Amino acid sequence: MNRDESGAALILVLVLVTSVCLVILSLLTFSSTSIRTTVELREQAATASTSDAGMAAAINTIRNSTYNNSAGQNCFGGSDTLALNGLADAESVAVTCEPDPKKVLIHCPSLSVCNRPGSAVLTLGRSGAEDGVHIDQPVGSTFRVHGVVFSNSNINVVKGNLTTNTRVYARTSCSGTIMSVPSPRRATTATPPTRWATTRTTRPRSRRRRSTGRCPPAPPRTR
Image (cartoon, rainbow, N blue to C red):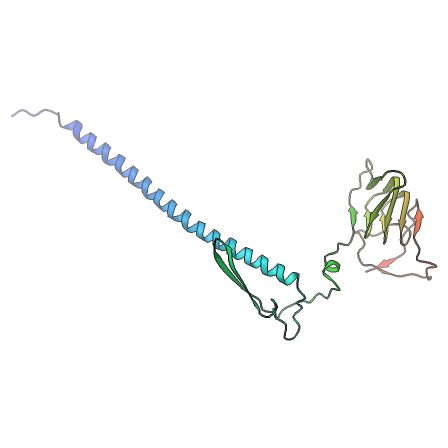
């Protein structure tokens, strides 16, 4: 009985088809896993986002209230729990507040006092090619600043005038019209002054505003 090799090609085809099927099955498995993971992570992200929004709302509520942890006082008016219904995608959040036994109290007359920076205008550059503070206002106009003005180099008021309700400091020099209480001073400290306790050997004659084009040396200051 004679046998030929006509069936050998069929075996190769079966091997190839089986291999392709295994590869496709693996890809489908990975795709299914990826889809399930994406759905789960999306739900977790939505939950985390809703929680963050609830926390931000609670902090803002306390920030705009008069709560200071006095005896008998609640964080959110009449309760220590803030319920936020339908905050995001019909989800609800409840934020509970309780005092921390390890706390630090910062007594502020108002929120603006605690949030106020040490200097209203602060420049740190030391390049001689440019002014630390350069003011070029229309003639006769005033550049008003509510707070300390500190320049790590110079202050150059080309036109108009610089007016502040407190101190002006410059590391090198001042030029132009500057109105401050007291007169502008040359900074002698390494960092911008904030809440200095002034030590004087003589009592100041007056507290009126002065206009000057120079920055006299500042008196000794202590923190």
